[in-house]
Length: 306
Image: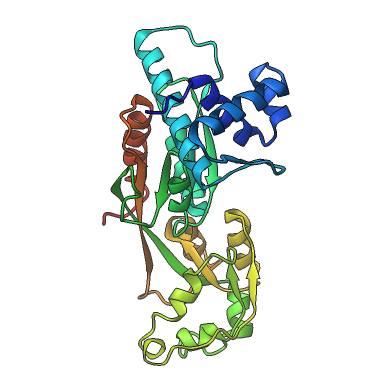
């Protein structure tokens, strides 16, 4: 059985997190030559090329497996040291997590802020669409994810968090210009022909809302209206409030705007619900256990019951 020295695993993970051998050497307080030697030994032990020497460095498919192992070893070492009450003199454990932008803006940062003191960890947040976030779990880039995928990634456990409810909204001035027959005549076909705000090119929610009408299911439409891409949660909402287009905003964010007339709900009887899940490594870990407990508790304050 192949043995993976912890210093080689740490070096490999540090190169990927820092981007270059030189930056990793500075972080580890060793020479770039020592970094290169450790990587060479690790690749010889596995018989695989683990690292693409690009800028920044990237893991190969085999390297993703080793990266996941390196992160798990670091996590277990940190847990063991904490339980034994040992002084920690190495780099602080970083917990990489992928979260969708809306969860990050609405509730996830509050969950991190409520993680109890004493874990001695930092959080490395990755933002990705909840439909695509599990790819980072598969690659070993992250240890946990807020995702819309119910099927567990290999080596992970999954639990339901609840439903994020969205509302289709637009500014009053936008409706006057683009939807003059509102509230009559507003359906999927009408919304398909007017300016829309999408978060980015992975964002399919507005299009899913357009095609959710019965007429669209009978005869699938083609996209027609212009689309603006605004890849930041606050700016996305501001773009809609300023009248650039219509879009879906989490109910907890747009509720006050609707109540005060800054936004108008386009289809009050058609909320758009997204089921969210928490996926994390199965590895036994106090850090992940405490984090998961906090995520479960805080998400319950903002998400609807499934």
